[in-house]
Image (cartoon, rainbow, N blue to C red; front, side, top):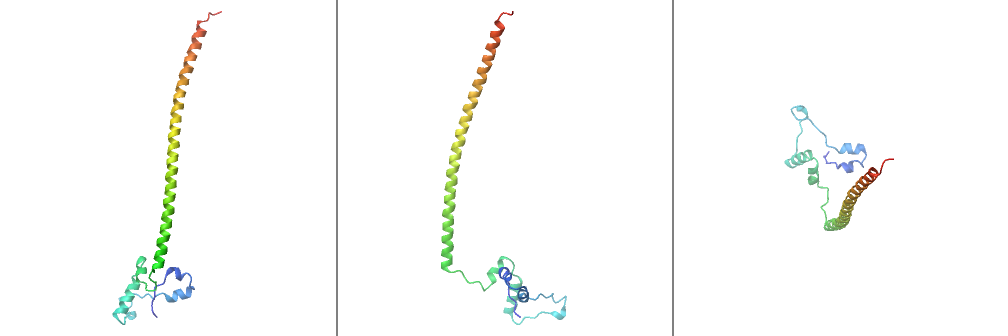
Length: 145
């Protein structure tokens, strides 16, 4: 039985019994089970077995021969898609910058308004104190009955 690398995405679509039969048999090293020593027919088979055994994560893609190479149409489609996405992102960025500029302008306008209101508040407080003092002096100057 030949061992093959199972693509996890494809393995989920196959029946479980088929996925189990396609997985390579694991064996203990010869010093644990001398009677089950694994022999290889040729150096190429040994190399292939060791490559399959060492395939983890991103290395599996580079070693699996069943993947077709990308063609130029696919690359052109990917480039066009990326260009469209870049244009959309640039348009969103431009709108965000315009929105930021408008909000900054409104914030500065509100700051000026608050500053004017604080000036008016301090002026009105001062006028109110002056009026209170005037009324207090006016009533204190009246003769008592």
